[in-house]
Length: 251
Image (cartoon, rainbow, N blue to C red):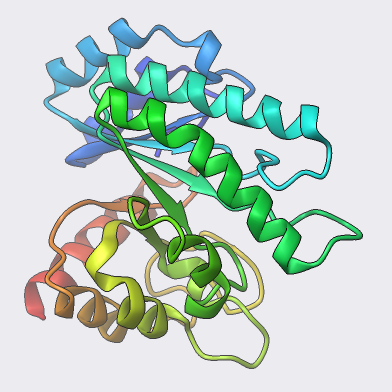
């Protein structure tokens, strides 16, 4: 994934130099906001480096907001992302459900998120882009069911790091895949110690990677994985990349 605080074109070169197959292009501030990037130059740079591309949006867009104007603004920003992604060549775009709605019960929040995604689907379909919901910290199959069951056209974006977070509970990867493995569209990989989203190198946390990747492979999935290890030390990124490839090939 590109660092949205850095020039996108330089991030494309960095991803290619590491040996990645594609860029997980996130369109968010401060530099990579959708209205601040040049989609055609990004597409050209990806083609030169022979990189594929997947679309990522900011995790904090308020799709569940109780303020109509605020929620409408989030939808407008996501539509802007869809338009840019279409120019870049993206066919998958993730969204994160918004549960930060004080004073309202889960039913209200789910309804707000559903209505926001319903508003985005016509634009996504017109542009040939599939929307997918990324599980966030604390999500499991039960918590995502009200939205995913209501919107069968929306896929699952599995973040294995997020699935591992939660004091005293097991990873939710298995339950998410048991219910929605057939809708799996993309996977994020980073390690942590079960308390917070640390984005550690693979093997530096408590995640059982052989178990988690085996569960993914059992669904028949064999597409894109984003390595979300946020380090300045390139050796740790390279190690994690090679380790994931080795594990996947060994299963």
